[in-house]
Length: 85
Image (cartoon, rainbow, N blue to C red):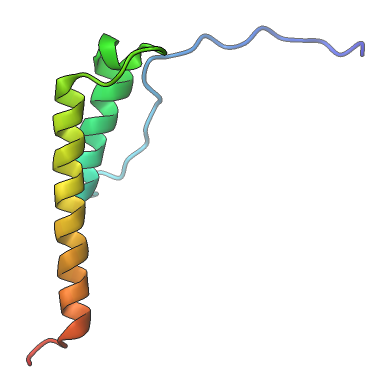
């Protein structure tokens, strides 16, 4: 009731990331990151509450889905036939 209410910190457009120097994202993760970065931080059209994604965002998402599907298929094939057979 009588608690002190500090003002909200100012919102930043991009969160601070701490990444190990030697880390690398997989191709699927890189595709997802490109899509998310575009949709949330770069494109004003995509960030509109009432708007739909722009053509670039749709293409980035299709690229991500294609890479994710290919990776899933590769994992499924490797599970079916053990290496060396």
